[in-house]
Image 1 (cartoon, one colour):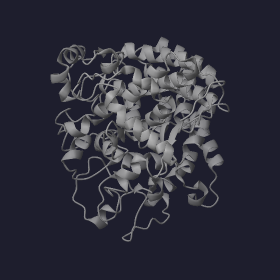
Image 2 (cartoon, one colour):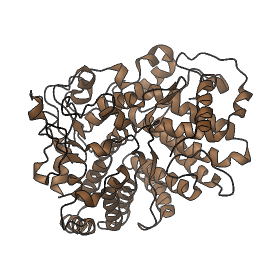
Image 3 (tube, one colour):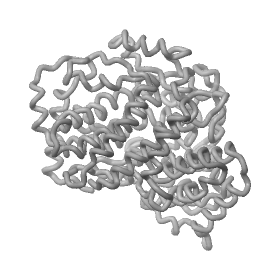
Image 4 (cartoon, one colour):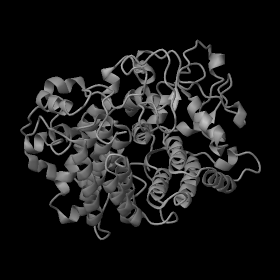
Length: 536
């Protein structure tokens, strides 16, 4: 997926004029002719939106290190929250993510800042220029889908956030946007997705689509319905009637397990590289033998071992003193306990499992929605609607897709599986085990969401949201069961946070709307206030 010189040049021109499209960090009112936006081709805005969505490395100032943004909010914060990864004796920037004790505004607010300044702003411009042009109807539809994806991630992290007035600083002069209630945001984006699917037209062009959908209208419809399913299932506790109604619409259009085939991702390139490569290999080398920082947790390794999952031969590895990654059996893999704050030398620390180097290549994909995630949600939907065992076929499809996902990362599964191991046989056996062993809804939901958690590795935003969705009466009880940190938790009493705190700048730049939003939080603007759908 190589962008040619002309295409890159035009993309850079787009980035150069981006500051004049919208209000910027200081909410300045710009006085450029808005009609000039109409000269920007929508395909370039679509390309920019997708790359920016992947790693936030495209800003109004040009190309910047996307790995830095991903490191800040995803790995120093959210991936430590959800305990895919953990580390010992974290430096100050990582202490908040592991111990919830030292709030770091630079790291923990960067997702809000970069999403509104870059991704959301570009999508807003794409909507603006395509809104009244019938020839651009597919761009409008895709922009609505991308907007729904983007704003859901923001509202799931913070609660009430600017939506209907966001991105309108230059277009409508709204430089202090109101915070929409999360319930209203969910209602709006579900309806927008339904409308977007109706707009998608195979007779009209859709250029600049560098996602795996590659301009396919049929695949974009599957993406829209997969996202609709995700949004609907997030509401399952707070509004089960509407949640099931919307999820059923999605299911009816996605079809049977055999017809649900679409994932949604962007492939990395040597220029727009997968941010995991930047975080773990290129600049920081945090997984190198000589500078080991983050390791896979014993929660992650423990679940793979519990289910005798063949992915334990693929994703985790152990490195020797020369940096080699030989094949290790399941028993050799050892996750680090999130509460472990011991002092290890490099040789001792190398005995804990980490991600295989080949998983972290710059050209590997960034998944927005995986096929496995969609299948696991459909399995849960069936269990809830039609009784125990109704989701068995979706579960089987989801587990198969989750294991085969390694193929997208340049890893041949058969190369790493022990002789005589068959993915088909494993999926059949674990599916039969789950549906013979467990006979109640809670047990099946536990298995489904443990698998969802395993498959969502690298995506802290989605994992954090789905984990909170599955918890019940306790702040520390969700699927999977996570470990209460020892030696920290000063900001939360030791339990996992429920949200992120609004950026400090909002208190001074947009105080009226900020205060209105905070007044709707039962416990105020802190880590423990639960958002609308996060109810017992």
